[in-house]
Length: 252
Ligand code: ADE
Image (cartoon, rainbow, N blue to C red; front, side, top):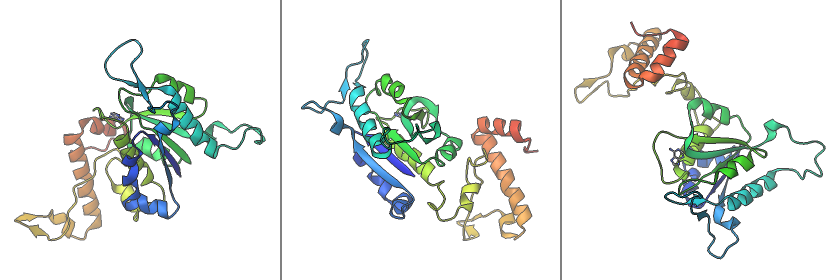
């Protein structure tokens, strides 16, 4: 998978060189390129923002540096149309993800969908956001997805990009060591994960649930399912209601 990350603070993305994502890059499973948006300005002050048309607080990101940066990303991967035998099909267009609190909420099922794609481009804006015409202009060149990582406001899109890149890339085969753990974790089946324990069996007066020491795999699986349902009902009644509607598997 190829990832292009565009920002006025591309240094934010240095954390992606650590740990499992760093290893995946070294192993050639992932290619991550960072781009400095200011390199696509033409004025002496390398200005990327301007006042909001129509009035209002804060600043808005100017469209032209974004178009130039995104054209640069495309030029690097798209064969010269004059040489291509026929136009690229829709599915061959890269995906452009624009992190914004005004986007659809990024979920595990969106991460699973994005993990199957070849090329993702992330446009991390700052200030009050990017001029809307960038997303409109990009529709012809990319599949455009404005996405939010939750109902709160960050100072910019960079941290949201890092969260999404981590959620997406760990689903790529070979990126994490044990793929079985992907199937058992929270959200993979619409429920929260069951509580986990390790040794010792008694710690500071607190025992692990007896059933987990029984060696009876069927009872353990049943206990864990019950814990998943209980936790989800208490902490995320919204997910529990959706689960009941879809599966009909519920607590007595
Ligand atoms: N930029 C600012 N806040 C954000 C959020 N919650 N999700 C994605 N991008 C953002």
